[in-house]
Length: 319
Image 1: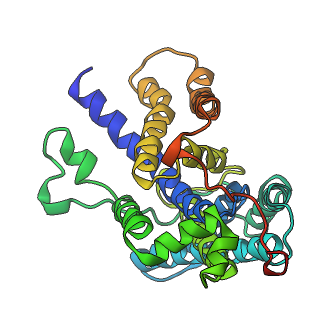
Image 2: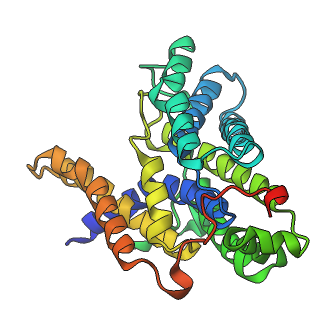
């Protein structure tokens, strides 16, 4: 493999892997507290359309428009996550059914497509694109330059967030309390930990991450609007949480691996390789299924098991 092809693959891998890191990290935090959110894809789609709508409508400076668009996407994700949290935590509805209902509302039922139609977003290219930076003037260095030192701010933010999440989960009292809520909410409640507050808080944070991940598609990957632009990335993010054994570092590595696989077809086609594009487009989904099957057959061992109370509603009255 020549150097330029390697650089192209790694750079594209980071481009396509970053939204998986963000969405997966949000889902990981929610699941650590015992809440499974299958509506990640819907939150990503709504984040994508809201961010694109904002940058198309905002008349201010480009950098301010992009910053505010990301913020809007996060708020939209938080709003959807708050609704979901109310249904599954307060009303104690089934998390799988509720997550699928949210998915249908935001994605399959076409709410994101409807908003795009109302805003007349389909077709034109975005007015602004998330800029990349030449960090320390090293973006021209061989291989690592464009891959490490020539990325946009959300790539660097995702690295920082992964490190902070790992520190938070394993080195802070709040993070340990969150894990206790996900493992045994009754015992956690008996210790004075507010189970509902932890679940609400981290589910809403997960929604913010999903919204930002969605905005990445319309601000960085493909600055335009296409119905279903996330193409099932929310499901891949959920699968990554499982295959990463609910660990932020493994999630980061897995997301970039999937990003490289996703970009493989585009990169080779751009270099004139005559291969069926359908094969490469299907690879991320085939890899996702295989990874989940392998992990499921293993059943998890010791520290690598899923949170024991994942998907289970909790009520103090029934404790």
